[in-house]
Amino acid sequence: MSPPKHVDLMVLAAALAVFVIGGLPLLGYAFAAGAWLAQRGIQVWAQRRIAAELAGGNRQRAMGFVAGSTLGRVWLMVTAALLAGVADRDAGLAAAVLLAALFTVSFVGGGIAHMLASGGREAQGAS
Image 1 (cartoon, one colour):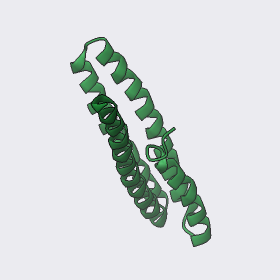
Image 2 (tube, one colour):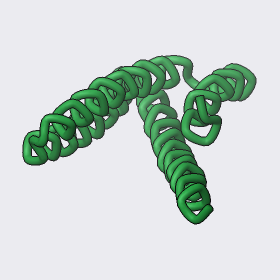
Image 3 (cartoon, one colour):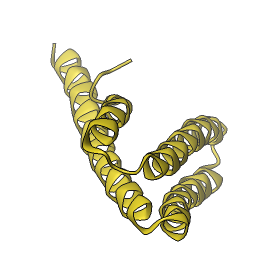
């Protein structure tokens, strides 16, 4: 388990302490955490399907999984923040900010993990 690749889960755990200590609405945290963990599950499932489709030589279907899972995950997070906002306006704002932070951390962590992995392959290939 590469730390840069999964740093978003550490941030999610740390955010609970920030919500409790800061007196932020825990309903917002609950909506954001539930949506984030659900989208991570969808991401893992989609990556397995994509790898299987690519191994079978079906690029078009693999790209369909990429597009569908990406859009679905975004809609899931937006819907969670919206529902939290309907329940309590402050909770909706807290959920939206937490989800935006988690997405940013995940995006950057995934990029760093990819660069480290590809850098290691390039160094091995040069030897």
